[in-house]
Image 1 (cartoon, helix red, strand yellow):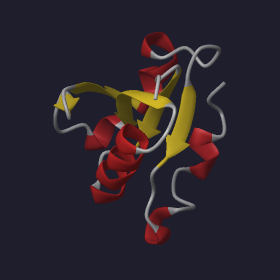
Image 2 (spheres, rainbow, N blue to C red):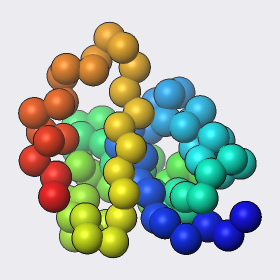
Image 3 (cartoon, rainbow, N blue to C red):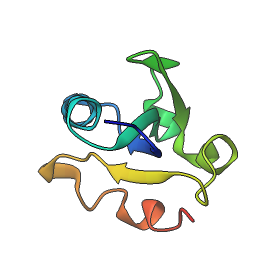
Length: 88
């Protein structure tokens, strides 16, 4: 399977790690990075991909050439929805 479309996973929790595995093993998407709120940025890399502050995502991963996947668990689904909806 050729990976053509770039995807950035929004989040870096266990849910994001599971999403990474699915995208990596069984999808046409190439996971190119992760993004989290600056307050939760704890590591610069995850699975050897960059983790960037959500506030700077457009600089690193332009929306015209990247897809985005929100990997939020059920308990926080509404917390950042307003901020995530402003991307692009």
